[in-house]
Image (cartoon, rainbow over all chains, first blue to last red; front, side, top):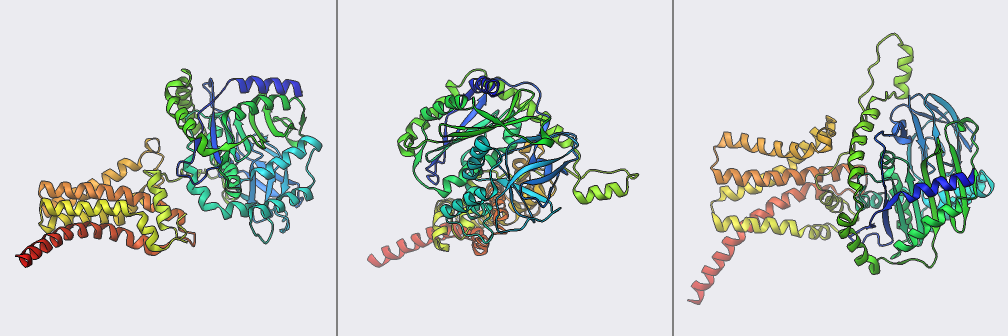
Length: 408
Length: 165
């Protein structure tokens, strides 16, 4: 299984194109660069799955079981749902972090493996999780390493890891919740988001943060698109917590992709009895690299990986010229088939949006009402509104600074 | 924590452009109706038209139309229709119409994005309501200041030449 997975991963990575890196040009985040990943070809069909946050808006129910390591998931939708290992689940009960990426099949009730990331709050059985956010990378890497080495991470080790991270981040919280770090940096996370714009057809991103490489790769650009904000937040919070002017250069990133295949040869299959039919989740950790992947029908759905590159980073200032040149040359030097990919993506995105609009969404109260009045025709509520977009992001950022007392 | 004036200082390029516009209008045609038109149009664009455009688009959930680009035509349409209406009521001359349309359009665009910024900060204790209230007024006042300063400099020049002889 490991060798087959490794070969499949190698062939998938070979077909990827590494785009020119992007950095924050106003000098507010000098320890982060994002290398976009593009596919060399795209099938005409969009995926038939949606992300967890999209599903929560459409009637997916996530309930606390009262057991720290499991939550109950009920998918009433006619489509599969991708739950990523970066998801942080929040509600009026203790926060949980998903242990590994998995797929929840359509119309399925299952038990989802999670770790508690809020030690000081009691679990409350049957209470719903209503929102998701990104889990910071150090906690994710720790979970992945544990999963690859010895299976499910012991809960008290996760709590220790969260406490250490909160101390390093200088975050004080009454219940030791990991999300407090995101809250502490929420304004910067929001205002710096636009520094790393999503590109058409992009399926993944490698974030070089200080001396770390964080990689997120999806099988479909639509899923990456929907998850991009969280992916950025997960890496960006680390850049804000540990400020420096060092980033990982391109040659180290290329080496990382080659090493990833080698390390994935010794991977461990994750067990989840209720989700075993919908895909296989694997975790691997060796040579300073840890990662996990989700495969469905021998196809890569999601891959996330981390490498600590001690002593291999350079200052962003010394790389600026190189990066600017790479960006300026990208329109001329990019592979010719990129145009086809972009065209295919635009067509797919339209179809995918139509697919999502058709998915019926029922909030729990509406579902109850629907059950009570089964004979009456049900009108689904309008789809969730898209986020307001500024006419000019720079202008919006200017006003955010002007109207904010801390001027950040 | 940056003070009110520190943050306002960061906006000096915009205020300077308004000041220069007022100065240029005074040099071109010193009749007060032109400069008042510009000052009122840009301020009204920021205070009324921009927020109204944002409210209309997002509360009606119509932002996904035109592949998510509806906000541009909406702002242009709102600003121009408002100016056409006022032109019909007041019977402006062509230059005055243009001097009203352009600042109103710019004000609407600025007002739309400023509204989104306020909406993002609305639940945060960091929001400075005084800046939100006063900034559009400062923009209009910068235009009037530019206009007045030409008269001031010209008067000072006449006074000084008269004194020197």
